[in-house]
Length: 367
Image (cartoon, rainbow, N blue to C red; front, side, top):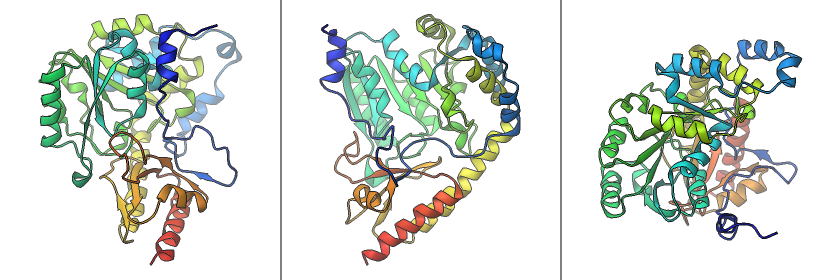
């Protein structure tokens, strides 16, 4: 049976995943994935114990009403401004499926989350990138903003994707820059805020929605909320955009357990704040220690649990693997090709100590 042209488009030119979805080799400690490795709150564990047999036997609420009510209350928005999905990945897949025709251009500011490009490539989009610069620590600055403005005037992209905080290097696009970019176009602008709750700021792009009806904000319960295994994501946008995304979504894409636990954590700002505080402390300790070792270079100023790292003389991905550490391989990622970077995850304190021990060994071995 011959697959259609969309299948051929994806798998004849399949982009490389830079994060190993499974570890096929024994003895490696996995620092490549993006989970936030923090203890779950007591109210979540209590909610787990309260799950009934009936909830597991019956289909979930297709409209996710209680979950949408909880999200709306947390962010001060209307329920009809919320679309849900099986993780933010489903939202990211559905946006081009709903709003993009084959051959239309999409603009990406790289480095960025590879699934943005992957989801648009599946729809046969024309892929356009603007690269931030290593010399500027991959900051989205005025120079990058001007480059984006020129691309918009030249090609008028159907969808523009912004990753903030960036899922590759942890840096943040200043909200003022996002609003300036929104002023350049009336086409769809997607701002992925999956990691936003890990930063020090409450300044979400949601505040721009009353003035910019072309804006979609993607968020998730996988990171600071700690529910990566349950796959619950959501988008916030103008109700007309949300109506289309919800009509496209499969009827039961968010399971009953995911709905229950996401509803529980949605209003728990105290726990989310504690998680973000713990991540910040570990990040500061680890990155400060790395900065004392010459030849290591931290790519950007991370505000999350993820950061880019390279060694000026060594293939760090290969060397870390020899030391039993699996990093995310970004040596050939868009915007990072040939620069030698890997991405690492700040996990538990014990794992951070383990990572630092091996980085010090690499440093000492090469003095």
